Image (cartoon, rainbow, N blue to C red):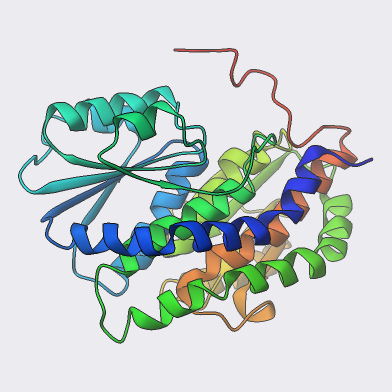
Length: 334
């Protein structure tokens, strides 16, 4: 049986290609204009929050410029917003996320420059924002977000990494333009292995996901919007360095822990956790960037998300769930 998410996964490479073609020069212009701002905020919810986490942590690995990330309502209720020479990038697939729209209105009231990233050109966020980047994906149905996740992440990276032009930034920008072909290969080459892996783990109800640096954002997405929303499994994301604070007491035989590894400095903790888990008989699931691509390691979330998508897709399938459907999202407003 095939679900709508399957078709949307196949459209990821083309969506990246179309977004680069349509928005590349515009994103460079926005990045140039943001160089002058002293304070930079990023806002998102759900998958959009995860893209903010990954982009921020990647940027902080090569830049001393501070970028703050918050959810929509955290930004809205923040009493210490610095409105002097500040900009905020607000992310939402639909451009109508209530929390994020509220944050945009708060920014406008405080004279903070606003940039929206969304897949819907006629949305409220585009209408309100001082500037906007449109991700060119076509309509997306599956709740956990595949092509909109990747194109939104691309847009954030492209904005941040074009703000500076040192030798540490140029390779990242160059490899961003390789992504359509890299993702096309990943989609075609990782389905079979992860279908079998999902079958093996289909009876498990609890998963942990760990990553360091930019991969923490992906761990957050995997747990919060892929496993919990898409596969209807209990899940918890952690920074790799936090394994020994809490999870170390719950790591035991047959508990699945997913490790995202790009050989960042923080992945020293990832490797120690893997070794500890192996001694206990934990079900370690290890996704390593080097097994899939030679792309710049700061772009690891773009690559590792694809096998995680296949794993989630088939995990839902083997439990007779549609990975793109929802039970409550969209019905409950608060």
